Image (cartoon, rainbow, N blue to C red; front, side, top):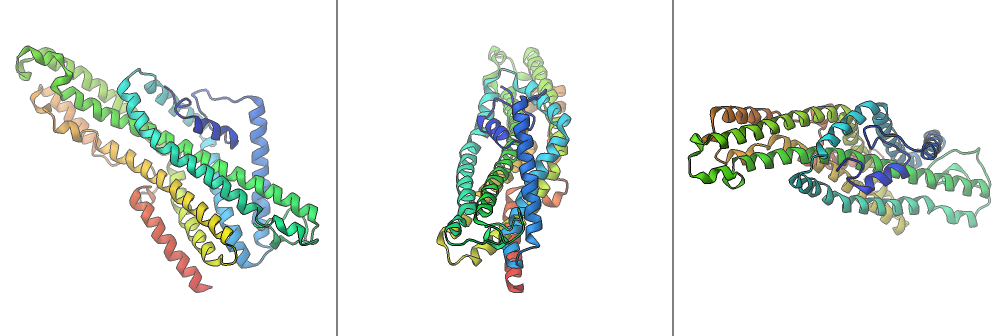
Length: 396
């Protein structure tokens, strides 16, 4: 097992989006993929610049309804990918440490990792499919205008972009619409790709905490140790205590390694998670405003609703994944505490108590505790978005 082979969706999205985030300890990509990535980044920068400038050239309502949300999503995706790329050495070091642990042939670890990763695969695939269709239809909804008009303005694009001076011809309009479509599809792929990448990193670390908890229980359970069958009490069974002490010290070293990996993960992703929290307040806010403004087109309303549902699903997966990591890091001794650990020798009991104390330290992956991703924060984002949307509608 290793990080690259854990999930094919992560690998394919990383290439398709042009993110080219590290997948191995010495991650490198063929020259063709690097050229492809440069092309995608160049296209995204041109589109984002044209979109920002276009918001100043159209009406305020058009800029808010169709432009601002696109700018938020584009800048969020670009910033998160760029920040991970800027810490490439840290990412590779983190992946190397994870791979060193994953290379251990342990069936229990494989099962725990599978339990953590598989539930996320179907929701992400649904989000990818539904979101791609929504973005595609949303960008193409203005194409029928090409058969009705000969002269076009910035307002005619679905999103306010400025690829040429207005007014412009049908050919320029169609070419601009194609660039708009391709750019938005790549932005969506980049956003989903980096979300999947971060989620699987967090899920793999979560699985390690759960593995430590499982092994602690197995150490203190009679059925896992054939040495208990000799009829002697545990207090007098030297071989049993020696075996347990060796195992628990090995788990302590494992726990120390995972703690260091978690600190590296926090350094890598903390700002990204805080940004995700803040951006989703604005994203859900403007999606709500867009839904209230759409009355003439049921198709357009359905597409906004479908994209909004996908965005909520994606944010929910991230929140639940981070919360599972926090809970797993603090609950590694909960089940083992109800076993007969107190009947072992003093060295084992002291070591176990130190593990309990270490697990009581709360873990947060965000830069600011206020913006830590969790299921309660998911509901807080929805409530804040609703309040801001209502306030903006009243102002208008």
